[in-house]
Amino acid sequence: MLIFIAALGIGFLLLMWSANTFADNALLLGQHFNISKILIGIVILGFGTSAPELLVSALSALQGNAGLAIGNAIGSNITNILLVLGATLCVLPININAELIRKNFMLLLGATALFSLLIFDQQLTFVDGLILLTALIFTLYLLSRFEEQIDNADDDTETTNIAVLRVVIGLIIGLAILLASSKLVVWSATEIAQHLGVSDLVIGLTIVALGTSLPELATCIASAMKKHGELAIGNIVGSNIFNTLGVTATASLISSYTLPEKIFSRDYPAMLIATGILFALLLIFLRKKYIPRGFGLLFLAGYVAYMYTIYIQT
Image (cartoon, rainbow, N blue to C red):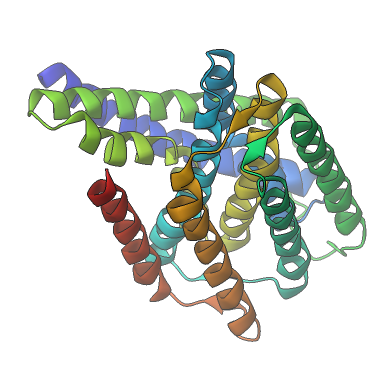
């Protein structure tokens, strides 16, 4: 028991350190190439921290459980908005860059709309996977075009002379330790819960569900504490785009599958509602240029309500 408690403590310490290292090096790399913070958040942080979801979906599909991928993607999107954004807002208000958010969040809405259209027949096939993968590539192209239209002349340029290779190595090391420490936290917390007699159901709904979103959570909070709100919101938007297009595409390219009924009656509507609330808040507070901290509690309450609903229905 003491070993697991020590492992949990070490896991959290490594998680905090690696999140800071990952966010710092991503920011340095972006400044070196004169890339905006929102694009750093979407592509580097958002896609990078979605690696666990991609691995889980691919392995599930290879093992003949491709249906788990859809739950993984949708569940991660809900967690990113309600839990990750909620916790980040409790730390610090999140700044909104009107022009960038307007363009990049529209990509998330577009990805959600395409996904909704493809699952209308309650099936995800190989062809659907190709469509989703093509949409992901097109999204990356649009992001690069958006970046070309942005004047980053006011960004910090003090990192111009930093060796790019050193920053990239630091970025990779930070991401690797971030993912590994997340696994360590989930493993040790699960072992502690089992020793205390907590059921597998509760463990799955709490520790494991939180564990898959720890990279996003740690990175967003680290970014917020450094007053880089654009990185945090970009991380969430990028992660949700990658989950919706990349994670589901990977699984359906490996194996076609039928969507469970619960997805349509509970999880998919919850994802749409969470995404819609975030979009509404971005529009409402566009002029203020930040989302107030008080809404963090609203998102966290929504996450608790969603988890409670799963528990009751299960």
